[in-house]
Amino acid sequence: KAGVTQTPRYLIKTRGQQVTLSCSPISGHRSVSWYQQTPGQGLQFLFEYFSETQRNKGNFPGRFSGRQFSNSRSEMNVSTLELGDSALYLCASTPRRGRGNEQYFGPGTRLTVT
Amino acid sequence: GNSVTQMEGPVTLSEEAFLTINCTYTATGYPSLFWYVQYPGEGLQLLLKATKADDKGSNKGFEATYRKETTSFHLEKGSVQVSDSAVYFCALSDNAQGGSEKLVFGKGTKLTVNP
Image (cartoon, rainbow over all chains, first blue to last red):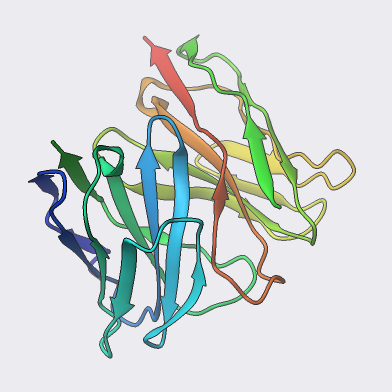
């Protein structure tokens, strides 16, 4: 079974632009979560989607948004990019919601804002 | 809120040495606990997990025991190999809080194993 795929793998944007990142979960997985990884803040939860609905959101400004499609694929969007948005953005999927679920991570999208 | 504290390292060991990476947590409920590993240029992989007190998770020679009394989940391996060089993350999820799949991570510990 194919793993979680994320596109693009690398992205360079200019401050003020917007960006859309894509995540395709493992086939059959319905929950998709997004995380931001930076050297300073570590791994931080952005949001989780299940059945096309946002179930939980981390402490990020409204510039960060996401959505999930009926095939469980997910996108996240960052508008008005800032230098501090440079990070590795990781997507994770899990087949269902519940205690002790393992999350399967993709390789990430490395976003650089100049 | 929930939080995870782990020793930050970096940790440098010789091959076949014993490894311990400390992890303690703060949670309002009864969280599930995880160790994830990240190899250079890759995403995270689950190493092991435990979902209730006194559970021991184990995989690839790594072990960790869920200690509720000390709120700890220390990672151990008896004999490390060069291939174990990676960054290790301790994490918790508290599904009791509205069924969220949110993981809360520690800062990560970089392990380097020399031949």
